[in-house]
Amino acid sequence: QKEVEQDPGPLSVPEGAIVSLNCTYSNSAFQYFMWYRQYSRKGPELLMYTYSSGNKEDGRFTAQVDKSSKYISLFIRDSQPSDSATYLCAMANTGGFKTIFGAGTRLFVKA
Amino acid sequence: DSGVTQTPKHLITATGQRVTLRCSPRSGDLSVYWYQQSLDQGLQFLIQYYNGEERAKGNILERFSAQQFPDLHSELNLSSLELGDSALYFCASSVGQGDTEAFFGQGTRLTVV
Image 1 (tube, rainbow over the protein chains, first blue to last red):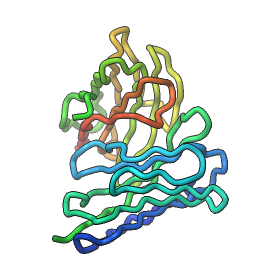
Image 2 (spheres, rainbow over the protein chains, first blue to last red):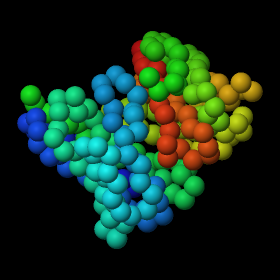
Image 3 (cartoon, helix red, strand yellow):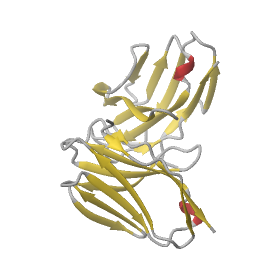
């Protein structure tokens, strides 16, 4: 079993939809939870960063962490075609070392 | 633009050869991380350097080595290359020793033929 599981998709939604992206993990030592966006042929770009449990909001993006269920989510409101990319969840233990990445979910937002 | 510069962008080489990938971190960042991204393995952490010293090691093969120089740029050396080493190699940098807020370069696409 992988430490971080993420459905690779693809996920296709119409413009304006609410998108829900999720990851599960098995290592209870993870304390830092990140979401990266990666456009084709580009490097990953940090979107959201959360420490421990709870929610964090940044514009159209909301990250949720449920440590009791070992489950994290990223919600994108009012999705736009420019949101079409691969979204990678990532996690690290205390100190933030050796980040483990999920496989990434490919998202397509249709105009 | 993340501020992290990787060269070259593309590299094609033959099996058994050796290549060097170069990374210049963002100004002020002391940590450099190397990752390998392939279709079947996803993004895998290879190694981290902090201010010139090796800080953490991931699933890096013995044929691979890295170093960080006094000016903080880093090089990843890949030797005795195999077809399976074909992948995107990313460098990332951060201010501190943890990589939770790391900035990635555009990557070097290595093709081994």
